Length: 332
Ligand code: NAD
Ligand code: UD1
Image 1: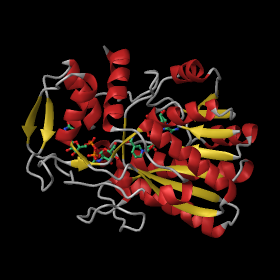
Image 2: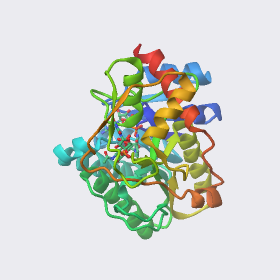
Image 3: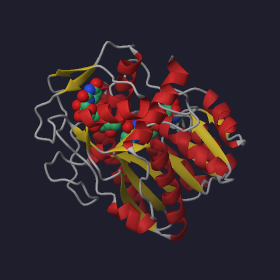
Image 4: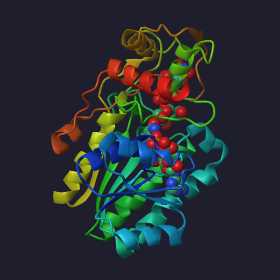
């Protein structure tokens, strides 16, 4: 049995789709604070198999211990968490509580009843701002917002646990910028409230929900002046979790991997890729830089390829086409 916390959410649901398609038994633990129970039906529609579902909060010792005791998962993929950087600045305690406290509570439950293989959703936000690119797993760490610190601390707790108890096997996966949706159009990102990230905002502008996309800064020291990021398709990212899970079947200890394409794409290049994929020229205007944004960051994913045989395959056109197909199906 594989336990997937946050499995009803954006990335977790894509991983569940792969696990179910592989014939694995899956139990999702999710409080649905940022997702809907229909994820279970959608997964069944896509794969023909239904995951088990337990609704509850990973911070709730009684709940999560009950899940571990009942299902005795041999491996846990931990997606449940809060992820909005801006909100983490306004509500730091909520972020530390869920992302650090929730992870510790879950680990305690697994320590008692579950297997000791654990795959953790970390983020490129753990790296210190730098002009040296690409970022490797050895690049200096130093988050610059509370969200990033919560990921840093949860990583640290996991590394300390592995050092203390040799039977734990842990993969820390540092995602760059996940975008796109399931090719079926049934799973995707469903941001609550006003989206902050580029792809949902690009879709809003393409749909006419907003008059135009604000391009935050055209005066960065990049190819065309707009910000550069390492966008990766969520199905590629999902596959990275399968590879990590497989690695833990044979490798002891802690393993850290960047999951990105290794290729930086600018905001203007993304707008062009969107047009090429969908035929829609999203209107945009150039605005001042967004406070806190970096000019460019992208990964070196070489270690993940070398050690796990994982490499992102999908193109920017796939990312835009699939994001738009999901958006049209869900919101128009
Ligand atoms: P998401 O919000 O779509 O999914 C998270 C899921 O966890 C949701 O279904 C939510 O209901 C659930 N959840 C939240 N708090 C919970 C709690 N206390 N108990 C139980 N369930 C809870 O987010 P996502 O984009 O799928 O992100 C998944 C993980 O990946 C998060 O840990 C996030 O920090 C990390 N991550 C995401 C990105 C990104 O850009 N999306 C980038 C880097 C890292
Ligand atoms: C943000 C988070 C990061 C998180 C990532 C993926 C911050 C500081 N960082 O990163 O922790 O892992 O999302 O969820 O919030 N842009 C526009 N117009 C828009 C929106 C974005 O021009 O309307 C630009 C940004 O300036 C940036 C690029 O698009 O250059 C990507 O932005 P975004 O999708 O928000 O991701 P990040 O800023 O990389």
